[in-house]
Length: 250
Image 1 (cartoon, one colour):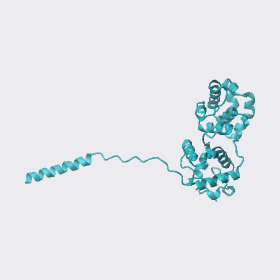
Image 2: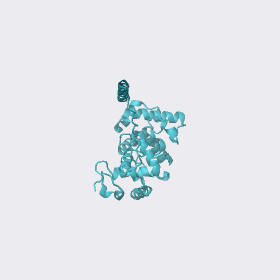
Image 3: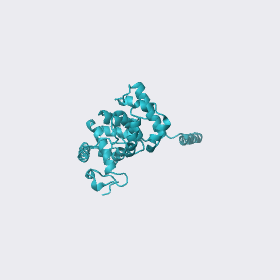
Image 4: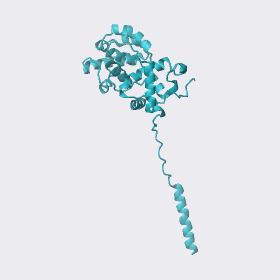
């Protein structure tokens, strides 16, 4: 009997030791999925759109242009640059380079000097010349009218595509998400994302499609004129009653 007891005790010890050495089951990885923003109630969104409409009924793209191609070039130049500066450069730029052919076969060093005030001028020169050549060679000299095609142009991402398609052609392919739209969409609790592509998808789900183009123009105007990044003019804001941002100054 004593022998059997010893065997049972030894077996228990081995089982306990094995349990201690066995690897613990892996914990389920935390999902990085971000929930829908609380401020996207349809009535609140409708109220925001109505207020923006009251404040900026005539909001439009502030990049001066005479045709879709000029708008494309100016939008490429506007990366990390103000529209005011781009417009200043454009006053003489389009006189010297009136069309895609002129840009496509420009002397790179000369074009760099022309657009130097907009910053990142070497990369922008490559993008503008590359896009111009692609438009000539693949699209018959016309700026494409679909997002799929326009994204094949050098230097063109969704923001540029949405600007050109929406402003030049009136095509609602998406919502322009620039620094102002990105900042204000989060401030108004219309999104909880920080990535422009995800923000655009969030906005497209809550903003009626027929409002996509005007909404981005109005939000950009509001960001430039009232809802500044550091010191928003909340006392002058007609959205103040709908806003519960921590950045509010009233």
